[in-house]
Image 1 (cartoon, rainbow over the protein chains, first blue to last red):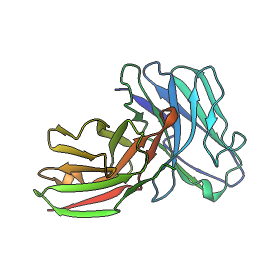
Image 2 (tube, rainbow over the protein chains, first blue to last red; image 1 turned 180 degrees about the vertical axis):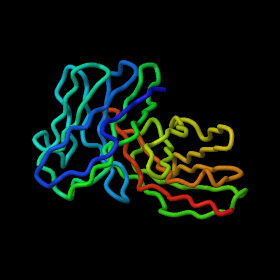
Image 3 (spheres, rainbow over the protein chains, first blue to last red; image 1 turned 60 degrees about the vertical axis):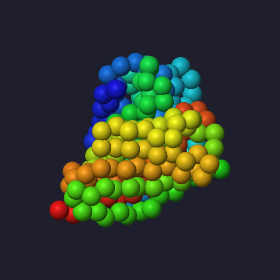
Image 4 (cartoon, rainbow over the protein chains, first blue to last red; image 1 turned 120 degrees about the vertical axis):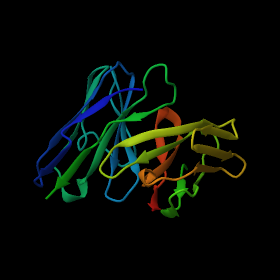
Length: 115
Length: 110
């Protein structure tokens, strides 16, 4: 498996501000994913972040709102920009560790509340 | 398109078996997964099954796959109060992403 940490674990933010969420993995991984879980809902993929290339965004998500960085094989950030209360969610990163084909592991999540 | 459906709630008594059901639409999915999410926690990968298998057993967990009906189930034997959580089924989609169901909240009563 992989050990994944996220920072912050939770935050309360004001409308119109931005928050950057960090995801750190204890091993080098090629594929890293960012998901959103709105209150009482399932998980929805925001984007796929592979090192050395631009992130690929899912329908309904755009780079201006959710810019992603992937500077190396163990780290990624997701920024939630110009936040509104509708952005209140849990944001989770996940990875597919090398050698564990099709086993995807999730970080503990960042619980964001926007006032 | 891709869609995964689950019933929202299941309540069982401690010691009974729990069966959580899931239907999916993408017949090209190669793997199907069950994840567990405890209150305030992230997702824990419980088990997964390759699409050419009918059944997979792992201790108290049994996964059954009916590929013809696109139906997946998770059976938990001897359910304990610690099994109370939300259980998500998920299927693979192109690019490695996962498509999740809505989650089934399992409540285990003593």
